[in-house]
Image 1: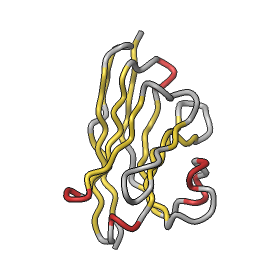
Image 2: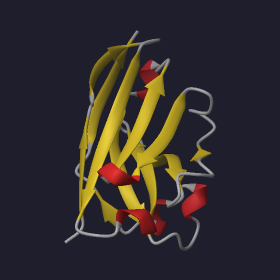
Image 3: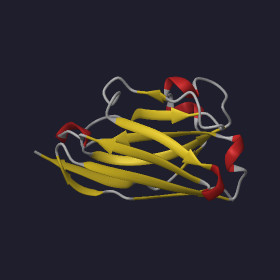
Length: 126
């Protein structure tokens, strides 16, 4: 079955950097659109970034544009999120998700993603 396992979370100071990874298994990774989502304390889940099956056309939430970079390594079945210059407001549980590339996946709508990982916690201190 489809399995998504995130790693790389932890504590980081504002202005530092962190790279999240998501290893996918159980399906054809290079046929799915992939995304990162997050949910901070007391907040609703929000889309962070998404990417098409070929690694092109990344989409980002305005709040992370210019700071975060989404990428994928098809050979390793792995999705990444490079977080540069994180801010305290980036503190959240981060989830990776897979989509059939239907619906509004490129608008970072969670409903367009059918498979989810368990999440990895990121805490940014000032």
